Length: 478
Image (tube, rainbow, N blue to C red; front, side, top):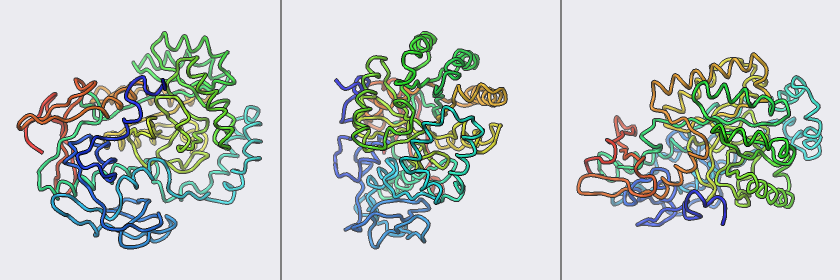
């Protein structure tokens, strides 16, 4: 049995039983979990032969479009297809395939070009291998200088938007607005994103990369627990497995989560397909031996087309907007999403290393800005902090400020602070839940439905807003 099926359904989790099962509906219905008849979408006529960039109601899209040719590059004048929506017999006809565009964004299928010649040069296989060979011997100031040089011009990247890109969310809301308009209904019910009606979800993760970081984990656990926060610790299996055995036992006894971090953190996991398959087999064996169900690649390198070789339940290797990562791109969403039957939990905030050593910012100002926007969007607020980098007193002080801020938010907002494995279980349950109508009221049925809440999407001054119904039931039709 595949490990990723132990906490939910297998491949069918990424699909929905539709009354109208054309592909254009799948992304919309999977996102909202609304009644199938509420999400009947269609594309207008024949779409362009080639994929490219265009805009829809202010959001940059990548895919095929109706009525013209999309742009090849995002820095060109992008065609706007906003005025090409039609409303036909209670359903909107969009000038593109919504599911195609959403998957293109989430799985980073849009075209990426190296931003400058230094980035292209340093992406060469030989130089990249040399850097990761020397990396353990390079002091942080040297690594910081090399990385700043390579990342030069990051703040001029147009897409995804930094520090947080909400393209998928704005596309879903724009589409929901057209669905409401086409159906002529004041509101549409859906299954709320988080359990117990939580406004947003927060998860803290720690990637353990070296001996010093491993030794610091006990102190970091003490600090997290002092704020009643449990985190997930990711360990490198090939180089640190034996040394981390005692740490793994301690982490689990204290209620923390343990996942795998890459293979040996040499930056080479996704460079070659055949090598990747060999390493993936070893990684899967480590996961079975250590009973780990989540994964994160080293330095956030990734190739989502290859994720089906992993036997994990969830992955945490895809940034929302990867301006400050070695591999540019980003999934452009702040919600979990499925890649096949693997759940992706995207990174939605700036890593501690980037904050301290690339941006030179030893405060939580940027983190607070990101948190505020993510909570307002009801999204996943996910953090990566490293025991290896938090040893320094100045950095540890900033991390303590972050924990205090999260603790305060928890007391003033209905936020779900939890570990990745719990998010994985909830999101898989949510994909199997259904909204059932009983007269004028709606209930949620399916695994975990006792924690679910009915919500409504409504239009207020032309803008989609979400309203939570009372627990368990709601009144009013769709």
